[in-house]
Amino acid sequence: METTRTLGRSGIEVSALGFGCWAIGGEWQNPDGQPLGWGKVDDEESVRAVRRALDLGVTFFDTADTYGAGHSERVLGRALGKRRDDVVVATKWGNVFDEDTRTLTGGDDTPAYARRALTASLTRLGTDHVDLYQLHLSDADPERAAELRDVCEEFVREGLIRAYAWSTDDPARAAVFAEGEHCTAVQHAINVLRDAPDMIALCEESNLASVNRSPLAMGLLAGKRQEPLQAGDIRSRPPAWLQGFGDGSGADPQWLARIDALKDVLTSGGRTLAQGALAWLWARSPRTIPIPGFRSVAQAEQNAGALEKGPLTAQQLTEVDRILGR
Image (tube, rainbow, N blue to C red; front, side, top):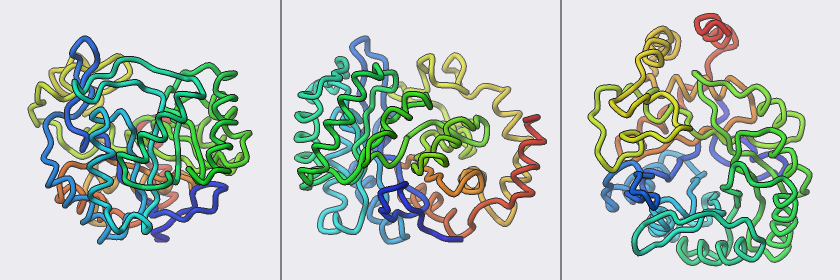
């Protein structure tokens, strides 16, 4: 398989697999104490995992200012160190948070805040530019988003960012950003259990990269169904948008049944279940760039190992749709 893909119309080349840095931010919460992270994390292990990913050919890392209330950006910046110029760094803005209490306090869609947030992210990441800057307010007003798109064009002119995107699951909103010259991607949820045909169509029509969050369905497609969830793990008290975890007692049995039905196809060619889920995404469109999360060197190695195995075949893609009744 081609182990690299182009990040939409920017022409920036990235590894076909990115690494999502939400989990390595550690614990954070909303004002009601609802966990927004994935539980406790070992920063030294996170740094080792990022560096191992680099050694295995991963060149695309996606974080956000709010992950761990700034902590994910700091850890990623430290891990990259002198190798910053070898990679493509994506981060996001729009959420407001308190770093000291690690609490999400709200959102801010003003152009002035975009600049303050970018300045703060550059400091935490220890860099002079962000390669892909993404609006993190998925349901922001489209008219305001058009203003923010213009602000992003200013950032490009100033050399602060190379390209930008919107993290949203609404193709109509993504299309607003796509009108900007340096918009090059949309980050959206998609995995083998939950396709996003309208968004893939938009990416193909508009020459955008499809950056795939939840590629492993929050761990369900990594085969981690029996693992007891920590109190600080978002999946232990799932918000309404988090599908597949029901009431927080663990994975939803209906989702598990669908995963079991797919297991033979996804684990073909010596793949692990997680590698098969990533292989489905690569087969789905030449635009896709999945960004699974990680918290350990072992997870980094398993995810990166999917690159050698490549995408599923067209026949296997059809078989998946048949099994799921799509």
